[in-house]
Length: 105
Image 1 (cartoon, rainbow, N blue to C red):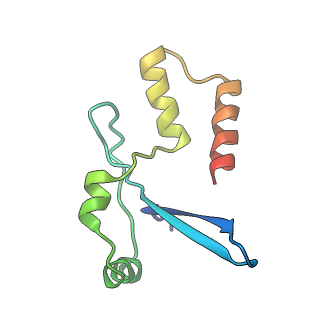
Image 2: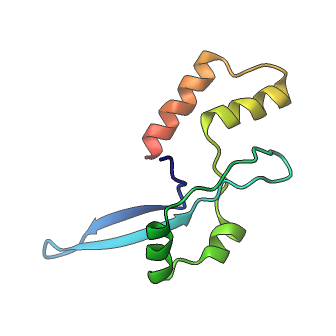
C-alpha cells in the first residue's frame, strides 16, 4: 500500500562543553495538494491506525493542509515542466532532481 508523506523531521546536533550535545529538532508538514499552478488530483491514502496515532499525538491536521509544503513526485513535476516548457525534462535535469532529492533526505 502506498501511503502519503505528511511530515518530515530533521534534527541538528551541536556539541556542548563537557562532551554533551544539544539537539534541535525541526518538523515540516508536507502536503501535496493541488494548487492554482498544478492539478494532480492525487488521492490521499492512510491507514486508520496511522491517522489515529497522529491524532493521539496532537498532529495538527489544519496546519498540515493550510501550511504544508507542496510536494510533487517526479512524474507530476515532469508533467508540470512539460506544460510550461513544451517538452519533458532532459535526462540530465531529471538526474539532477534525483540527486538533490537524495542529498536532502
